[in-house]
Amino acid sequence: MMLSSQVKGFLENASWIRRMFEIGHELKKKYGYQNVFDFTLGNPDLPPPADFKKHLIEEASKDEPFIHGYMSNAGYEDTREAIAKNLSNELDMDFNKKNIIMTCGAAGGMNVILRAILNPGDKVVILSPYFVEYKFYILNHQGQVVISETDETFLPNIEDLDKKIDDRTKAIIINTPNNPTGRVYEDMILIDLGDLLLKKSKEFGKPIYLLSDEPYKRIVYSDHKFYPPIKYYRNTMIVNSFSKDLSIPGERIGYIAMPPDLDGVREIIEACVLCNRILGFINAPAIMQRVIKNLLNSLVDVNLYMKRRDIFYNSLIEMGYKVIKPGGTFYMFPESPIKDDIEFSKILMNEQVLVTPGSGFGRKGYFRISYCQDEKIILKSLERFYSAIKKVE
Figure 1 (cartoon, rainbow, N blue to C red):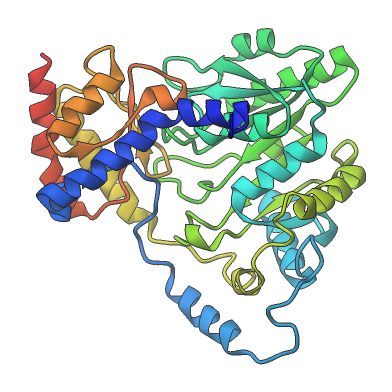
Figure 2 (cartoon, rainbow, N blue to C red):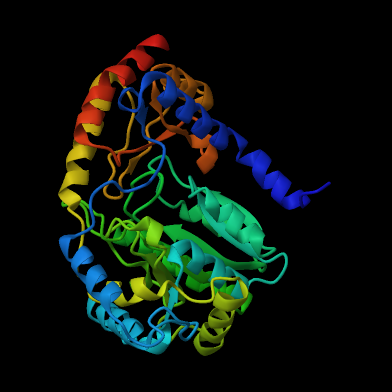
């Protein structure tokens, strides 16, 4: 066998997703790009804030020694200092540059942490429905994936989590606002989660870390509020990126932030800096580090995403779909009108509408819509969603 058995398994598990992209490409060639309604990718279509281009041009125009060279594996000190100051103000906590590591996006940051803390067989709990890549990230570093089902409203089920955490559990990953559901966790659920993790840490005589994946924390709609998980549990590590709130996912820039009172903080930070190098990231992109330090309070127009959410949500509800209204992100996760979400995705595909089946996120019977599309495309697609649900009534 030419491939590793693990990667071969990864490919097999992801094959239907690849096939969907391939079919989408063929549909676009056949019917024309404007006649295929692709809601599969979470690829933000809004332009970055105006000051992004300004600072990008300024930084790219500089002619200084080693402007494109290596820096500390943790990243530029002034960028880390700016992020630490911003977090200190936001969270009313004492962060400094030593608590920040610049990474190649949140994906890079998550892999760095998992490589640093996991021994072979250590368990990491993820909440279903989950971001597709979490399982791969954990398995990358010989961890064991444990899945906890959220409740019918996609909020953490504390009773189920209690059963899933044992003496081999090293960490739990949460994502609020959530991909794929758009749910934003309220303070009461985070209080309960923090209490549970504190209880379990005492029971097993070791810290259980909470990895808070926060690339959507600023894409929250006016009818909701983001509650930082770190405020409710001390042993929380923040993983963040600027991909979504600045609409620059291809630039691969993010960071890890650890509070000063995290158990083992100095040792873990040193390990993460090392892992940033040995995993092949080396350091986060140089120009992007210098650009984003000036953009920590900049943001895309979230109201445009909210308007799209309302169009989709109100229309789908009127058609007879069951949907929990997202509080943030640019995703929604409707229930499939038939049990087989993959089959219903094929029915939508026949209507030239592309969505992602919920099975890929660990929750069968649902599908994800990513509304990173122009409002005109969304409006034009609605008759196709209506046609699809009528076919299965």
